[in-house]
Image (cartoon, rainbow, N blue to C red):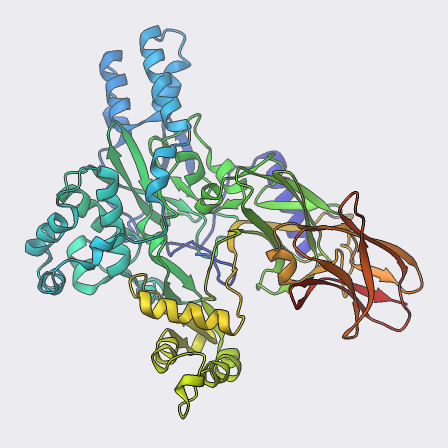
Length: 614
């Protein structure tokens, strides 16, 4: 059955079928981290995608209909001016293709199109991942009143947040941050299927919202600050996106006009994530002022005019493209070819390249089942200069999800989700042992730091996990948790999910086989090393009694060696001329794993493992 589904998917892609339906609606946050899940009739009519609409509370009020902006009696001067006013790249592009177009207007339209198509480097300074401190400087009495009497109090709150600031970009960021800090995503309402009022007053009264509520509140606060902001309805690759779009729009977001350009903002997705049915506060600026084309990998507006990009992306192209997170582009990453789709059928190893602008970036890959169970050693990445080539394969005919993760090499990230049994049976006892009540001077942490740590994680029983309680402004607590992570040697090098796609076998390929490793198994230390790469063998299974040439390039480790059953049995020598560690040796009999270790200082780290068979 799985094979038939994959084959049908392949045929749909091949023949570009346009009938796409789904019963699933996804409005909730779509941001994904390594340990979390991510959140009718269609026809073209001029520059507008029209559809059979049904009322739904996930929608927001939008400006006048796009078609009503362009009266057929209007002169080209007025038409172009209207399109530029709204950033309607779809209309402007269509105009440039007309044989009777005025050359001066074509030149004007082309400049606008280039402005929207080129990546805007000036806004990167606002995508810091850090909240602006002004969000916590609103007087307490106003913070209480704004949730009781929004109509009379919100104007004063907005004034205090933006007073004295000349940059409209910074004003928008502060308003974006305030909403992220104070409004909780209402998972109970969303999953109930009954969406209550999402106007800005109702949202502030309840202190929670779904996407339309976040969008409406952002519109109101921006307009109070003198910044033009509109809501956009569309489709998203958010929570549980499965390669299809629903009958009705499932998400909404904002566009704000700064200068002569519209910038896209998704406050909902920047406020946090949804893990199962629980909202987890996780602030980001990933979707703040993200450029138009990168935004279209995850957000598709129902009106082409709100793509702010041309030539416009079709709904079929949107569905077929892989999910690429906004932060993928912030890391300076780029796909080197268009072969990667959302659904991919393979006849063996599937390969694609990602290029890096920044050499201080580490990438890794994983293959998981549809239920998020990780498949060991089914992927491999080889880095050459500023290009990483990834290979993926699948063990059988089931459907799988491929993931790419990224991090800055010097980035410190606390572990934000821990299984209950690990936290309670391993972490807590180890942390408590660091403080000796009868002998504080001999303790490795203070009593206050111990209390900070215990109060920094909260349990969600139904998810089987503890979560880190985010508060960017509580520096003493955050410093204490980070210190304890380092004392206990808990990893602070977590990576962020930046790209997802589906993968399964073509009809004539059964997969590489279950219960075997396709590629070598890599440990965390291998991924965290900046300049260590296995050159050979690039296979996961070694046969006992055969001779293998083991070769690694590494400037991270002073010594490398073979580790078998807990003992170091053979050193891997380094060639002084090439700097490559090499060893030609026979694979021992009677073992099931051969492991390569690295020595850094006085610590031995497991790097790579091979499955050994007789």
